[in-house]
Length: 271
Image 1: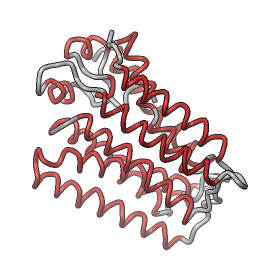
Image 2 (image 1 turned 90 degrees about the vertical axis):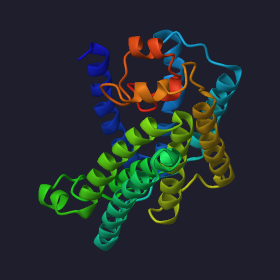
Image 3 (image 1 turned 30 degrees about the vertical axis):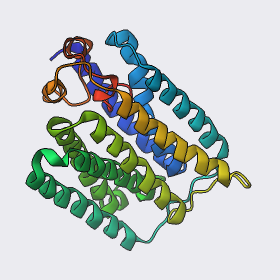
């Protein structure tokens, strides 16, 4: 019950709300990529809060991500309407249940070998959450019966809670960097493609090439930020840190004691 943990938890909830708002207002290939780029903020804040020195590859990766986000934001056009048949909302719920339920079972069977898979599945869960927010009925205008009767609402709950659980497991059982990199891929690539092919997201006329380039480079840069954030602690210290009072909400003292890498808490208060 430290103030750092409580502040981080509050900011996690604020970040969830703002991420959901972004999914309603922006193309998913932009909103999901920006959310994954929070690794950059984690890395930069770690300099002051955790007294961690970033390596040259990390600084280069941060520069790549920022430059790619500029390209992506410049090329992004209007978001799709999000109006889809209710049947597709049921398919989203079924897919979320299968993804989280089946993923949890597979991870339990594989044990420590499933860290990267758990990270990927958690990213897909967060991606399904973004898709669910986009298509959710009863939000604008607000209509409670429509909201509660929409399967997409329950897909959001399943994918969000299940994604956080699998993310926690991924951090505990294996490589933090590998799991985080896999999470970035799952959280951005699939929702971005679904947004374009299913929900009508688009780029500005004549800027499709820039949108594709910015998306690919931004995802690659975010993966690099996670991958190059090698922990400075002894082997196994990252797993010990991940089993602390809360994943993604470690305070400065905890991080400095373990020598944790800036990407070890990818969903920290930076959201």
